[in-house]
Length: 147
Image (tube, rainbow, N blue to C red; front, side, top):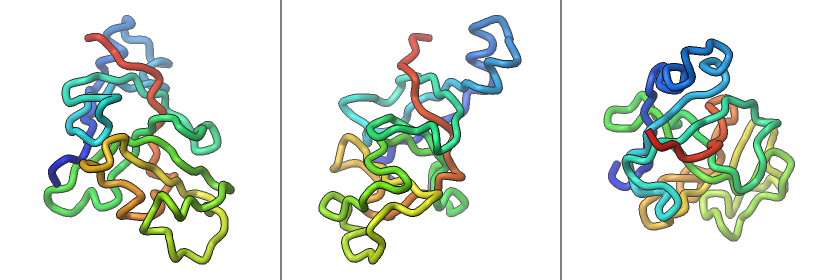
């Protein structure tokens, strides 16, 4: 799908950059952005450092990396990178997310995230897909890397 921001694993890139520390490798991963959905914040070719966390450590407006909900379908990228709009327990943002406009729930359910790409014209996100499952979360972006 054109315009989707996809991240690709870079196995051990961070660990190599910090001398192979096992603890860092298990908590952090470097990923490469491919796509336009997070422009102007992130561009194709940018590298970001992702801290592996659970959903209870994510805050609103953080950039997160998670598995594509339809990653097994041909042509879909395995990973997406988006900005969090609403977390479990938050009010459902119906006005910003057409896919949730007629949802009967008042609050985002446990185990779900509402995410958006910064580039609304080139992003597959909650506007089309509704909730994204928190159990597919890789982590939060800590910073851009210069590799």
